[in-house]
Amino acid sequence: MNTDLLMLAVVDGLSYAGLLFLVSLGLTLICGVFGVINVAHGSLYAIGGYSAASVVMWLLPKQPSALLLVASLFVVALVVGGLLGAALRVLLLRHFQDRDPILQLLVTFAVFMVLEDVQRWLWGATPMTASEITSRLGTSDILGVTFMNYQLYLVPGVALLAFVLLQLLLRHSIAGRQIVAVIHNREVATALGIDAARVGTLTFALAGVLGALGGALSVPTTSFVPGLGAEMIVTSFAVIATAGLGQVTGALIAAVLIGVSRSIAVYTVPELEVVMPYLMMVLVLLIRPHGLFSVATARKI
Amino acid sequence: MRHLSVFRLVVAATFLLVAVALAVPWARVPAISFLCFGLAALGLTVLMRAGQVSFGHAMYAAIGGYTVAFLARRFPGADALLLALAGVLASAVCGAVVSVFLSRYRGIFFGMLNLGISMVLVSLIGKLYTHTGGTDGLRFERPTMLGMTLSRGDFEIAMLVLVVVLALAALWLVQRYFDSAAGQLLAAIKTNETRLEYIGVSARRVLVQGYVVSAALVGLSGVLLALVQGLVTPEAGHWLRSGEYVFIAILGGSATAVGAFLGAAVFEIIKLTAAAYFTNAWQSLLGATLIAVLFFAPDGLMAARRARRKDVSS
Picture 1 (tube, each protein chain N blue to C red):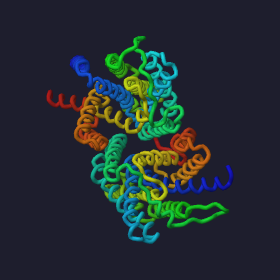
Picture 2 (tube, one colour):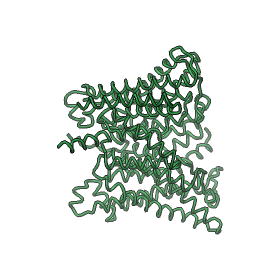
Picture 3 (cartoon, helix red, strand yellow):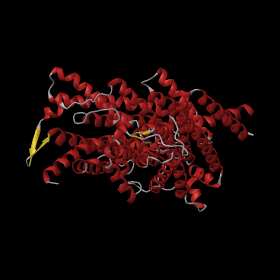
Picture 4 (tube, rainbow over the protein chains, first blue to last red):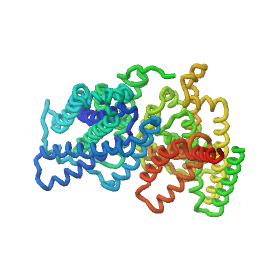
């Protein structure tokens, strides 16, 4: 493999890792607070992407600036992801709160099935994309290789920004510190006067925004078809399982690991493309059964 | 007394099913598919007994089905029973290999890792076009049954008899397994695994055992479906199919083995309703029913029925 190809693969991989990280961040956040994997997170990703594509298509005839187009992706993610995430929690999962985690997993799986149909009703089965944005943002040459600015700067930049902002939020804002307290111990946090129900809704809204943002930022480079949500939820589960459930920094490292190895596979052994994330996950889990950055927990008898 | 009434119910239902299927030719394939879904759900019920849910078990149906298709194409003279046996064996062996890795996980990890493995398998089947026929699947000639070359109608009747016999046998064997010491150990993984380890039993070994049984049962259902249709496609291992199996198992609950078939019957009714009235809402109908069942009868229909009976008697 020559260096040009390697550079292409790495940039592709980092851009994919950025998207993967955004989605995984939402998933791991909910997992940290509730100890539940939200399978419907995959639908939030898909719906975020589809609605962003619709909004971009609606904007295009009005001759918008490139900045407005990019901004529209963020606005869509904020509105759609935040509303759907919060609704999922308030309308449904709240009623299953103290049940067995497996049962809650099944509930989110059922929601995923319903939302899969909803996507088909709203957007049909034709592929949707917004590639206009990538061409508007132009390209740049590095060492004789041409890259899309969108993949080179925007996506990894947003992912890193999300990481830093989330860390700041969790460490220095009151709402964030309340989330950390609830992750640590819900009962003690409630006893200290934290409204755990409100924190829960906030977490779901935040996670929803992250998931939908992952979708909205994918839509300029990927064409959305039915079934993409299932693929994304499984890949991002591979990321958070590799990292250790609930680990934010770990998720970043695991996303880069999985994203880059997948895109190197795309350029060298394309048949292995889909297998790569799980292969990495299995390799890590064979050595560390609960992920790279997992913390030891006490056994309860 | 209770066992007796369930036994009577099963016998009556079997006679009814066979009579209807023999009298009405178009009901044969739905009847076979109902029993196959019941068999697969029975496999998931075994795992649910240990408190585990797998979102990828349809992969064993695909493994069984593809084994049958490969062998039937390679050795055109092979008998249907031999093919079925080979398919079930392949599923059980794959289940044994996978479970060595998976048996250290419980709960969410267990469910999602199964899903991951099944998605890898299905996408590999889709990509390796030259060997698997890609998404079109593999078609094969109708094999002989016990050495007899049968016409299509006769083959369907023979398959129906075979499926009924195997379903009854599986039902009886799994109920025996649940009542045996090994089955009690399996249930102990759900109630308290640590105590199980303290009395000197390896929980991993118990789970591997249960996993192989469940893989073989799902494999059997895939094998039978492939033989009836003369075709196997990657759809057989799709996550949606796994979800349907989980759905049926949840509906039936893990209290008894019969529950899986009761769940499959309800599933078949929902499927027929959806086909008649809501053609585009199959998945959402399934999802909505699942939420309702989880909310109102989280231990399944059999358990709900028993709880009501207890209320009445007290």
